[in-house]
Image 1 (cartoon, rainbow, N blue to C red):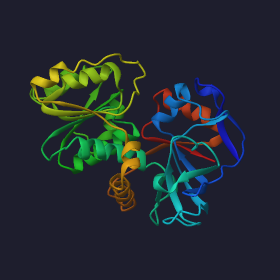
Image 2 (image 1 turned 90 degrees about the vertical axis):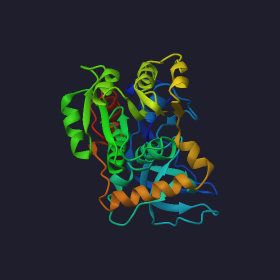
Image 3 (image 1 turned 180 degrees about the horizontal axis):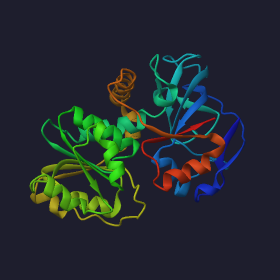
Image 4 (image 1 turned 135 degrees about the horizontal axis):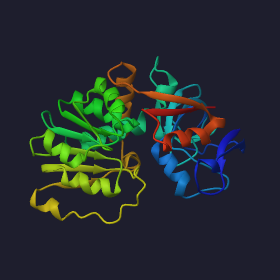
Amino acid sequence: MRAAVYDENGGPEVLRYEEVPDPVPGPHEVLLDVEAISIEGGDTLNRLGGELLSVPHIVGYQCAGTVTEVGELVTRIAPGDRVVTTGTHGSHAEKRAAGESFCWKIPDGLDIEVGACVPIAFGTAHDCLFEFGRLQPGETALIHAGASGVGIAAIQLAKRAGATVLATASSDERLERLEPFGLDHGINYLLDDFEEAVRDLTQGRGADVIVDSVGGANLQKSLRALAYRGRCLTFGDAGRDGGGLVDISMLRGNNQSLIGYFLGAELFLGDRAHAMIDGLLAQVADGELEVVIDKRFSLSEAADAHAYIEDRLAFGRVVLVP
């Protein structure tokens, strides 16, 4: 098979498109012919500085395709099924071996490129808002990086739950594009201090739930933008500034919470998160939730696709097609 690979960490230019051995599924794994790859934010971070589990290394969390072979202990999935899969690496390729526990059948009628974009973005957004953020109707949610895959998912989910939805983005144009998904108030973080803007928009109260994928100095400001008993969820470092230490001393006096989140741990530990993502796939298939695919690249253009994302040009998902 052919894949986008690299031998050392670095910028998008380290990616090469070349022939590599086909993966072999283990007893609990399925093998699929990949038809669509959703590039996740973590894919670019791993390429930049993550562990190389092999050389050459195939990066990538999430992809979808048709199953061609199953391991002897696989029970839920059969050859011919269309599935979307997640894993620590290996998505940027024409074939992938994935654990059965990290596969979801794509509902009939749902475009496979759309299905490829659902589990990580929508699963992360849903868990941050509800399982860990405990968002209630009438509360205020602040979604950072509103134009990202997780951001667009979180805006839809929060609005549907009856929350007032605030979001940050890098331009007024991007914020305007978010309004149809349920955005109530947009904050252009290049022009306005989002901490001050949140206080102004909530009459000084702050946000009840903040979903922060940026990390670093942004995370510190998020804590200062919380309401009394507010909950801040951190799950990424998209800001890439390293951040340093975060001062949590102000949380005690206001009974606030800072919660770290990682979807992979929830998937490892039980069936709850798996069933939650099944439900989200069904809601996307029924048209209750929308996946936004900004641009498609050929797998051979993986370096260009990574550069496009890192230049902050994407609105929603970027998909690779083998």
